[in-house]
Amino acid sequence: MNLICFKENLKRNLDNALRIIKYNSTLPILNNFLLSTEKGMLKISSTDLEIGFTSLIPSKVLKDGSITVPAQLLSHLLITFRIKILILKLRILNFI
Image (cartoon, rainbow, N blue to C red; front, side, top):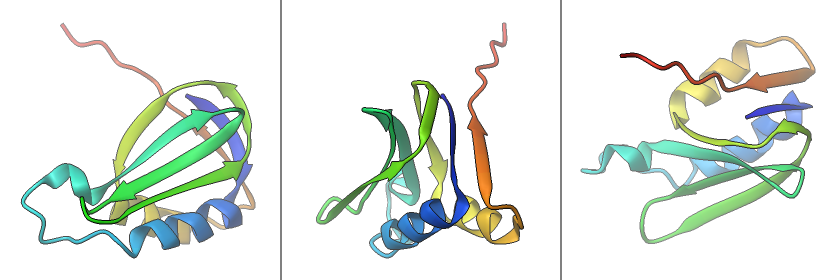
């Protein structure tokens, strides 16, 4: 996955997705965001198995892909960035 988007758009949508995450869940994957590309946009998804949230963010997708990332970590990381445009790259490392 490789894309370019505005930090403010991403942060606003992540904050909305973060509202439904319950951190005392017995399933650790529910503490993550699913980031994927769809139709030239970044798609953010989160769920607590009762309520789901999905949002599409306008972005320039250079390479399709998807990944799950810890919700709190990504949200706090974006607060520390003082840039306006983000370049997100997913690199796959193969360990043998």
